[in-house]
Image (tube, rainbow, N blue to C red; front, side, top):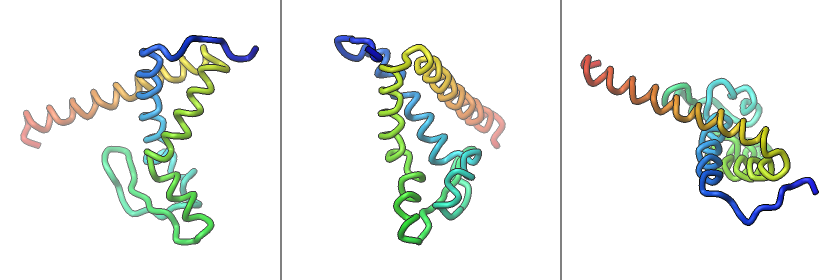
Length: 125
């Protein structure tokens, strides 16, 4: 049997999956570093937040649907959550490690933004 049998998800697994899904969805749908993956389906509009881009779906009918999907973190999160859940069943150790890294990245992002806001507040920047 490829998947381990469990009685259901552990609350920690749900929380870890949620944070990892959030981070990976934003990375895939908004990050400037992944814009080449979205470029065939999107048009660059401008920056949107720290290290994120605002892109819109191309008007070409064939590419518009994919463009809408890949620029929407809510849409991407359905696929990411499904993939991570399947990964937890099929490859639990590797998936948990990847989710831990994504969760740490989300935490680091929150700390960076908090630090930047505190510096701006104290220096009047």
